[in-house]
Image (cartoon, rainbow, N blue to C red; front, side, top):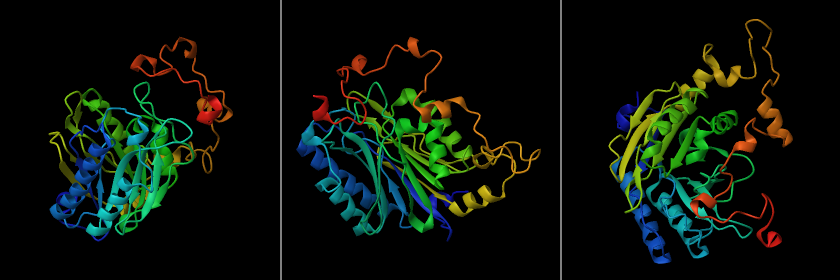
Length: 337
């Protein structure tokens, strides 16, 4: 159940609104300022449309559009006016919000970032996309750990961005760090529709975790985004789904973190997040806690290499018009030059 989209709220529930925001065109600072105002307006719409809503989630590229423009004059910072307006809107309407921005990076390409702001305007989560959608996206890959925070009504909340969700390791890491709800914001267009759907469900079921996922919607005259707001329960059941792709529609559902906790501690069959490191516990006490996965060892050791590695043809962004990078990961831009 989803409480009729949050209309009938449980004391233990978290009501989420996913904004299938109209895909914008942002090519100038003036357009960036107008789009900031548009997002602020939609925060207000979310609160007016459903007073019980705890968290409103905007898609990736909601602020900048899909141009992939890395012009420094359009890039944002955490202490800049755009994030400042988002913080004010959340405080004014007493609602948590998740927002997307392309973040200035003085040492390299900008980051594709997301923030979560609480209902008093506090910046609670800042995440930089680990897996840019190569070769299409020019963004610097994020570093560090995926942050997991205490979210509305005591839930444990994480954020990943778009292509991140195609890597099962990302959702697994969120769950391993305690996330009960994982947000996935995206700018995907229609060719990704089916893989979007089944990865959202798999990420939920394989980790006994709610996933709340949303894309942009509509057209900017070049690209057509698909909306596809989806809230998936921890058993893989779709609780809400914006199949119409209608721009600026807010898809809502109530989710129950308390039932996530109950499943994680009470399930035997298919408690996969636990059983990964307790293989065969029916046969051997506590199960096998080893790591038989070659790719994990190789990744940690810096020796990850596919059997077909030498045959991979696309290994930089030149096919999408970006110059081949000379700077290595972790190297500052000035040092590379």
